[in-house]
Image: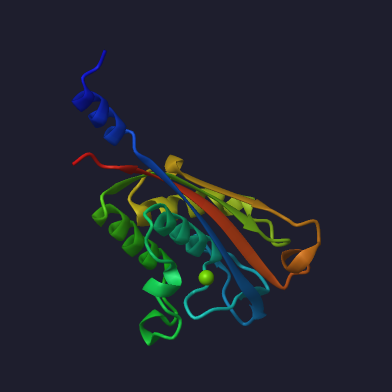
Length: 174
Ligand code: MG
């Protein structure tokens, strides 16, 4: 039988938290397409106050959610001129700092982009490397995937792109 104190410490050591994130941006002419910090040459790009990196935004909200912190709209409001044209990877680095300040380590994130075109898989390694650098984790702790929506709905019609993400945090022992 383990002593109650040791039981408590084991429980603390293995305290995990999950979070989820979701984001959508509209596609527009004359905008750059930036996903996971990678600029992808294409005829249109995502519209938004920042660089509209829908993948980074979903990952950030997953991390914030896992730490029970407010969403990115609260931290980086689109009415604030400071975030106009912002590099979302810099915002992601700030989010990772907030999560660590609250006492958590990032175990991993996973994300899924919903987009009909262009083909994104050749860019996954660069997206993983960029997100990992911003979050100060290894690339193998960052999953990036994509799917079409079979030409249905707003991603399928090419009106926009969406991304969803999950994050797993581990509480640091006091
Ligand atoms: Mg967004």
